[in-house]
Length: 263
Image (cartoon, rainbow, N blue to C red; front, side, top):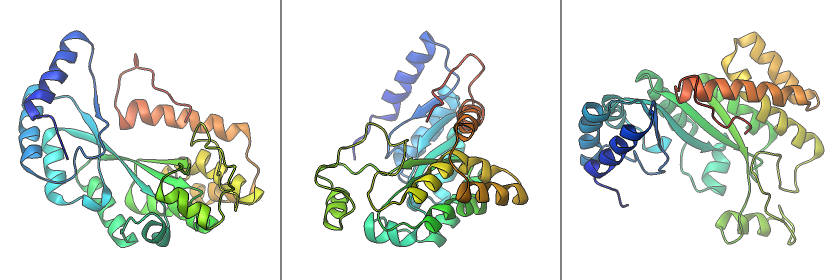
């Protein structure tokens, strides 16, 4: 793992701040906050005193502990982005080689709430071996862990990766499979039925609403997700909800900032 020095990074941020209006910083580096170490200790002290702007960074849920969160909180971390990949413990362990139990997942996600750090959490739909019940369980996990924003994407296996080979070996994709241009349309593996694709698309559109409403409304939305057709209204609702959460809750920008909200 290689990093810029803390001084080098802060110098760059202050340079941008001197030239442009800067309300929020997003560190889009997968390993930015991997563990509590000397670099993060130095960053927490210098960023809070010299920059003092709320920020978002990427974390790995299986590496989260109190020491890490204390430093992020000290630095002024407002929100984090992370990916669970699958709500199925079996798929995470056996297909994705992400050795993380559901108990650890729930425990660590709840730690963010304890430190008043908002969470953007992505689940991947359409993974090999994941059932519709597994996909729907993502909402249950989100509600148990106070996830702020529940996001989804669809699996897109890339040639040359272990996951691609797993899909080929287990007959999830054909030899003429074409990699989609986006991971935000629908499941791409051939084992999904038309009904399962519809449910996944509904979950993609309405999952966050089911996550952030009361129990009875959430139950009703889950029934809609499972049994009703996918319609344009759901996509419009998703865009509006996402726009609000991205601009006001996860990234905390002002009204002059427009963020892409069509995912």
